[in-house]
Image (cartoon, rainbow over all chains, first blue to last red; front, side, top):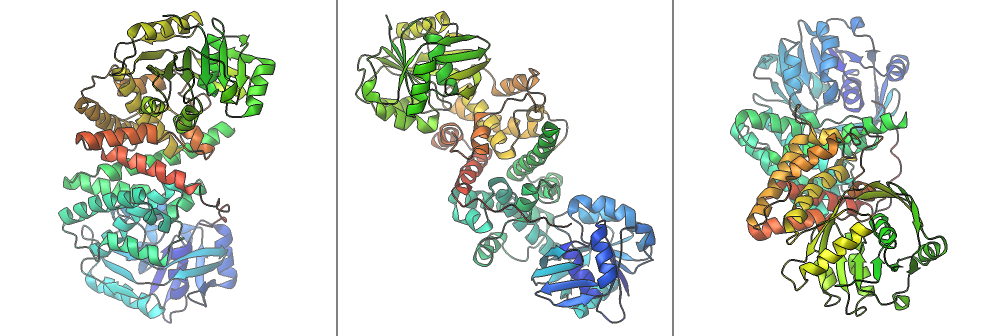
Length: 310
Length: 327
């Protein structure tokens, strides 16, 4: 089986490196960071932390160098989904593409360019230590299933889950993978922007009454949208919030890291996604809309600051 | 009614502008928090540049015991510093009238806890930039609106006299029998604009009034203001100006169209300096009024909670700069 990870950042590298050690598999990676690509090709893709291994991966920053693949694993940040799949779609003409990204709305974009699409949600996380070397911070499962409007057949989903699980990334194939996706979506959309707007760690967001109440308000809207869509959640996102307080008190939300580094955020696929699906389903989501607008304003302020500097 | 001697309590931007202009027509004393601030004012006088150019002579002190008696006291501190400032003059100048100039609501209650002075409410739209302890730039020479504190014994004649003094000192002033319609217009405007600026880091730019794209901030401002209007209506206050119109006018005046010239709402300045903001007096007052009157204000509550939490983050040790993350 030939698999190409599209977007080989921290999460993408976890998949690529594990696949690079699987017998009978050929792992490719497409990423725009040339130093990362060159390091992978020279020394292999190294993981440390919760996994210690070096995977053999063929990496490229040039999409035209990709061979036809059986599977794509899309792991870019959501705002790069469109550009990434437009560049690489030719490699998946006879394959299926699975998104393991944050938020909702990525599969819809993939489906504009690829025939068979797989919906996915993943929990393992890591960070890049240096080019060619990623630290795996947390282990966890990945849930995948056919993307209903443009589905990959279940046998194909099973095949990918089997390959990933054998490679050391435990993956469950489900007929309906929306529950896992929406549970994580609602959790992320309720906690990430609150951390980003207040610069507080997850635990502090939970401990302060004003922010904890706001988080619950955001969760309630997300649950209402999921319910109207007929999505059965895996768990109560509010309980996940409290659980995360116990295990990741000092964690700084990725959106807070983005904001502090003046990078664009994934808000369009988190709160913006909930608001979009809510609007289509006729469920009001005023808080998620307000939060999305504030984060877009924060992103806009980076541009203002750049302009002022010149 | 004759108000001969004036005391300005707090010499930030607004306090400095008021003290300097009134000093043209009356003896003005200034009570500052810092002794060196008072020393600079006494030594150099108070220079005004921008819309007006002059230097005023004021007597300044940081010790309330040194204050001479006065007939009109003007509280010009930030809302966050009002309680402490009012307690400094507690029991003094029993015959004086006191005027509050703070943003938001509730300043009069704070002052009335420290003395039985007749109270004048005011809302000011002028703005300036402090260039030092003894130099303030007069930026926008827009009006100050004033009126008797609702439901108290303050006479309209007293307010009229203060209005006359402002104008004689060449500040713009308008006098109202009931200031609440103006106060609430500005409250709702400030809650939406200052809160959004504080959270996004954006000055009051055109995006605040734009609604062409779904993500633009005009939608949020419109929704925040709609909640505020509903609270005002439930409170029986007929707004003097529509806060949405105020928002559109402010960003279309030209000077705020680009970041280089955009007005920096005071709450954003406070956030940038990691100082306590006026969120309690502005957003907090609006949210509590909504709760009291049974009007749902979920979006204003969200903004209020986020700003409160942001203030909390400054109490922590400042985090190290993020390590560069490859992507």
